[in-house]
Image (cartoon, rainbow, N blue to C red; front, side):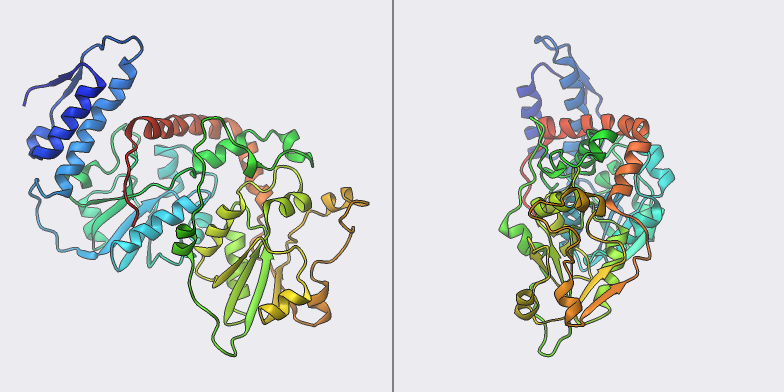
Length: 432
């Protein structure tokens, strides 16, 4: 097939539709898409972006609908492979994992090494050990493959005994500037899942980059969870999403119920470790998650970084958690203990509040030094578990501040890519 020259955006999309209808054969997919200088000023860059996306669209459609013949693989079609950096885990990651699991019976998660991420995207904020712990702690993940390649091929999927790889509808570009999943799309071994709206590691890092050292150390700025840029895509929490993440189970009669509370902001390895220990003390773990106003009052500065609903979904994705209390009270009261039949109240050795902020609040409606676990201690049901991994939310923020220049370069690239996805390629995809 000869080179295709299109003179307008409308012509390009008409060609996309025609290609999908006719399901072009594989040799046609190698066509060089030539872009004629468009009549409207400033549109060259737009067409340059759209041209390669047309090729990917045709390849994807053809592969999905069986127009391309592929060598048969003996890999298990019920084993689904999903890979990623999983850096600063958020509900978008977890929702992608959940959707991928719905495509089969076993979900294999591939985790890229620090070096692989740096080579293809830029330096990660969280190290391999931390990212591995977060994925291992996810309730939808069955198997883990470490040091996964950024651009997997059919041989890699066969090695993992997975017939298909699942990924969002955005294009992942590797260090060579090509689609990291192009080979699997051509082989018909790629399944599309819906990208979660309004949440990404890029958007979180963008918020944190706006927090200068002075802002971070001040006790009065607006919580980052409430910061909205003019063009920001909002994270929308629906009852369906919460239901999808919920375990939908009740404690058995006579079960030993454990309660732990906190902000669980920028969900990290320390949180997962403490939740695992708390769960081991009983049969059913309930996690109380404080709302944005309570967290900001007791921790100050720009906290929380993630809003209440984002934090709730992150905690619900953890395999050690049975139930959550959305907007839990700061103090564990007698009424809460009786209403939920709590047998044990747990906290880690890292306190959930900032003592320096509590000192600043003296004389306000907060009683300085008041113990939120006073009632539990009086009933002799309070247990403190060792926070064996000494990491807090502010430590993650400090990493970004200390490595600001390198992370800013990465953010600039990924933010531009994300903006192109929303403005040029995003279409409706039903969610699993």
